[in-house]
Amino acid sequence: MSQTPSGKGRKDASQPDSEQPLIAHLIELRDRVLRALIGILIAFVPLAFFAQELYSFAAAPLMALLPEGASMIATDVASPFFAPFKLAALAALVVALPWVLYQIWAFVAPGLYLQEQRLVLPLLASSTLLFYAGMLFAYFVVFPVVFGFFISVAPEGVAVMTDISRYLNFALGMFLAFGIAFEMPIAIVLMVWSGFTTPDQLAAKRPYVLVGLFVLGAFLTPPDIVSQTMLAVPAYALFELGILAARWFVPGSAEVDAQRRSDES
Image 1: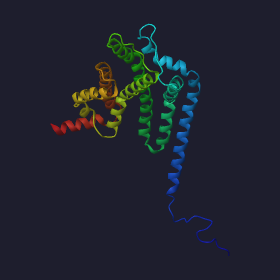
Image 2: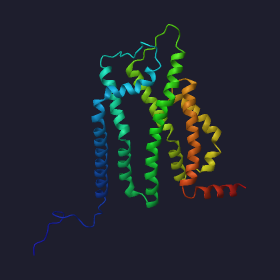
Image 3: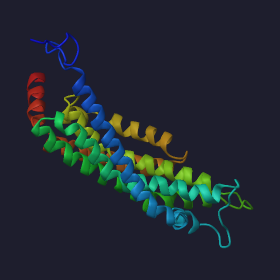
Image 4: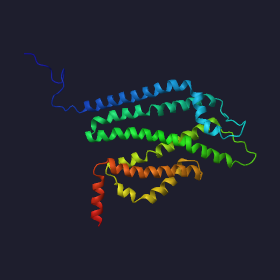
């Protein structure tokens, strides 16, 4: 009777199949990243055709406040071409954000319990909406006030003519700052859900949070009290909303706070 040579033609059954799950996870991660990139590319293609109009829309809050006859300038030769396309690429990422977040959720969902899956999907959806809300708040509320303040304090005889690339960097920084600030309720729910803190403990730190938000606003926004306040005040309101959401959505958080109060009394 012929025998299969040892170590050839088949795998030793006594060896654990430890590498296969890792390889499968890496393949799954690669596929999810590729799908996310394809979604961003699909969003970018139509936006690229309207890159100039998109930039004009982004610059409208400043252009509406400039003196009659004033305009923006381009100090770099390639800025008129690259600045609008840069904005179109970042706008594509924002448009495709729900699809990107869905790919993240689809990758981590198999490793979550059913109760965690029910919580993660609403968190991803609400985080997307809050990020969009932060950007809209910056564009429609903050930009007119901040730009009006900057133009009003310009010395007499100084013509305000902003470079298009510098304006784009400023606008993107403000969009990012307010988009992240509006994620405050999601961050609070996640901290309470992970057991890092409780709603009552967060509520006890209200004065420190308010001061910290003003300090954070000084770093994330231009060095003026107007934009700093317009970031800190909505973020604090969202902090209070996050405490309410944590008490409502995170199971057991109210019982933990009640037990802690009884232990302290």
